[in-house]
Length: 412
Figure 1 (cartoon, rainbow, N blue to C red):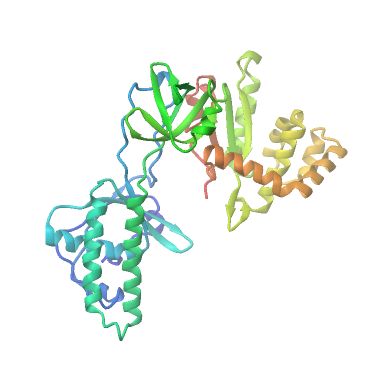
Figure 2: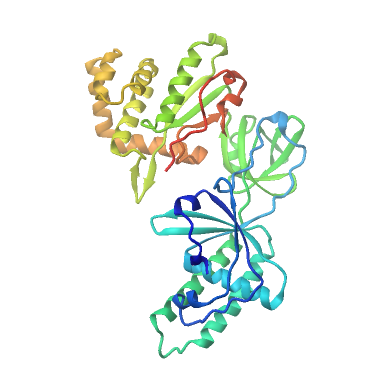
């Protein structure tokens, strides 16, 4: 059984696991999950050490890099299973292979949450979900036949619940296939009532439920995100008007890596001639959990985020000086730092009052911008250049001489 393997939980979170199910049959008594551990057959897991990651969206950045053809993307199917569901899945697949032959390859990622370790099963073969549905149905029938309905034990009930949960998750995955989202930069045009995104050497039709909103951007340069189900057609899921020559930096105010990015970028920009300076917009990351806004470093970080947001929005001349001073001195009260760089007592009082009376409104607006525009809820600092998320700001020509690490991030 899977429980035979002793693997450090911390390491599991950094593994990418590719599972090959042994064609050997696995004997499993149907009177409870706990009794499965007594069987002596094996499931073989080959664990490949590499960085743990979830599939990243493919990005097509810059009009000059566009291909002239968009090909439909192959969907994948994903199941998030607990240990009991994973055990039943492995047993079911092993029995199916033993009975029908063939192979069943899939990938797994392990991650911890408040409920324990969850396993993310990734299926690339579009036929496999239907096969799994059939095999799980066979397993369910065998289990039902083995159980006395007039004398259901706790293990019987647990087993039935696990099999039903697995079956429901397979059905849900089949109904909701996942495709990698791509980004396309270009101009929105309209021809004979049909919308297109057009750039250098390409023109793709635009579909989806957001076409009415997209039509309002006609004639403008945008970054369009979506999936490709039909050749040369993108089904839009998000649209952002392109912000030329603009870097947006998303941070948590007490994240040391975010502070490093802020101070490095501000100092670097000051060395450039006025006509070569890009615009820099600093935004703040909040989380929403159980209908309550939180931040990785707790309430002190939320409070500091709010101070910086009000200074940014209402006292912009003081914003960069305040950031530079504050990033080097997080121990003193923010009011002392503000006064030290020239913010008057009256303005400090205004900042305090603004935060006290409009806290929820300020946080909600900042959260909505990060999440609804770029789907950013974590990873400080995150860089967005001309409305597209980038991994390394130094790959942008104007920032090529910037010297600091962009790899480290605060992430929950």
